[in-house]
Amino acid sequence: MKQLRGRIICKNPVVLFEEGRFVKLAGEIDADTGDLVEITVQKNRLIKNSRVLVKSSGSLNSNNLDILPQNYALRKKQFELIWKIRQFFHKNGFIEAVTAILKDAIIPEEHIEPIRSENGQFLAASPELSLKKLLIGGFDKIFELTHAFRNDNPGAFHNKEFIIAEWYRAYCKLDVIQNDFIELIKYLAEGDKIIWQGKKIELKAEIISFGDAFKKAGMELEHLREYFRSGEFDNYSYYELADYAFERYVQPMLGNGNITFLVDFPEWKSALAVVENHLTKRFEAFIEGIELANAFYELNDRNEQKKRFAREEAALKKRGVSIKADKGFIDALGWGMPEASGIAVGVDRLLLFLTNQTKIEKLL
Image 1: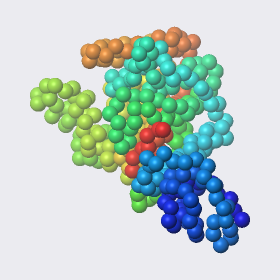
Image 2: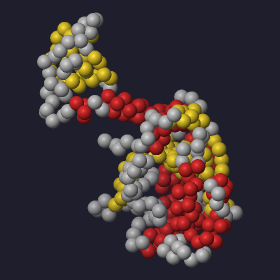
Image 3: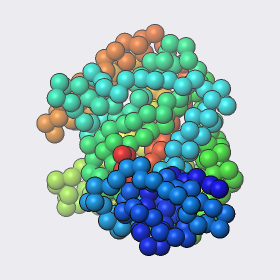
Image 4: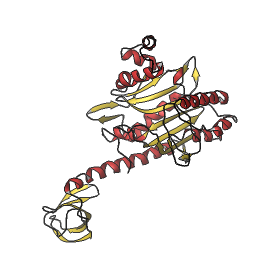
C-alpha cells in the first residue's frame, strides 16, 4: 500500500499531481478537478480508498492545472540553486552579510533608475555601499544574496525586483573575482559546461577588451566618435550613441558558447572603479549575449569618489531627478578602504541558463 496526497488534474482517468509529478492511477474517485485528496493505492495502482482534504472553488480549469507540475519542478530547481550559491560561498570562507533593503541614500548613477518609496527612501538597487562599509570595518571576504530593485522596463531578462549576489575580496585583483565567477557556475552546474536551448556553453573564459569587441562587430570607437561629430545626433551625446551601438551590435556577439569577460572599459565607464591610464579597471561577464555580472577593481580614494558622486548628481539633476547620495559612505572612506575587487551577479539571469529557460521568472 502507498498513500498519496495531491491534486486531481482530471477525473477520468484519475491523474494526481503530487510533489511536482503526474501520477496516473487506475480507477475513479469521487472528487472534482482541482480538489486536494488523500488516496491509498494498492500495488496494482488501483485505488483502495480516498478522501477529499480540500475542495476546489470550481473556478480552476484543467488548462490552469496542467502547468502546475512544470512550475513545481522549475521553482524547486531554482530554490535548490539559490541554496547552493550560499553553500559555495560558505565553503570558500566568505561571511554572509545582511544589509538594509530600504535605504536613506544610495549611489547616484545616471543610467540606473531607482525606486523611491512614499516616505522618500529608496529600495536598494544594490547592496554595494553597505558591503564596502563592511570592508572598511574589517571584513575581507564578504557576500550577500538579496533582493534588488530598479525601475527599468520589465522584459525577458529583467524584472523591477530581482535577486542579486554580490561579493567582495580585500587585497585582490579582478582575476581572482573572474575565477570565483567561473567556479561558482561550475559548482552550480556540477560540471564544466551547460546545455542551454540546445547550445553547449563551455564554462571557460574568453577575455576581450571593450575596443576589440567593437572591432569584432566591425566598428571602431574612434570612427563612431567622428560619425557623431558629423552633427546628425543633436539630441544625443556620444556616450549614448556608443551605448546604443554596443547594445545593438556588440553585446549579442559576446559569450557565444563560453563566458566572455569584457575588460578595459574607457574612462567614461568608470562608475565606482579605479581608472589607470585612461582605462577603467572593471569587467562585465556575458553568456550568449546576456550580461550576467558587473565587477570593479574598487575605487577607494575618498576625494575622487566624492567628485564622481557630485558629477553623477549633476547629470541626474539635468534630467529632473534628485538622488540623495550616501554621504555616510564618503565619510567611511576617510577611514581607509583596503584594496579590493567586487562583483554583482544577476541571479535570475544565471538561473535562466542553469534551468534551460528563455526568460526569467517573476518572483511570486
